[in-house]
Length: 113
Image: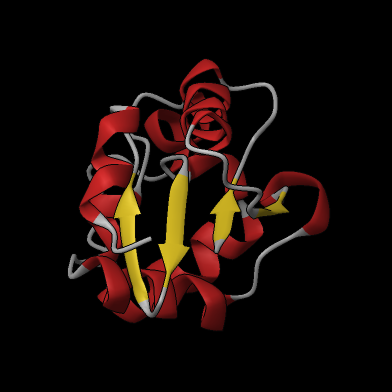
């Protein structure tokens, strides 16, 4: 089990606490500090069953100032998100080849863990 986690994010911390409250000790991927590849993002999108744009935090200043209103191809989002990981919604929890966007943390319970 992996949690794509931003320790500065309240929602991400709540997701991690939810997992720990269930007695689980997930691998923590601090994708802001450690980075995340376009391929990893593509895999997350596939496991989540969403389009790349659905993973974008549109409230971020970078999005508003540089991307809002632009026509961006789906494949280009993987590079954009990799280069600007703060734009990725969080936390994402992966287990047994499936993933959920754990906002609210109770969404984690949809995974078979």
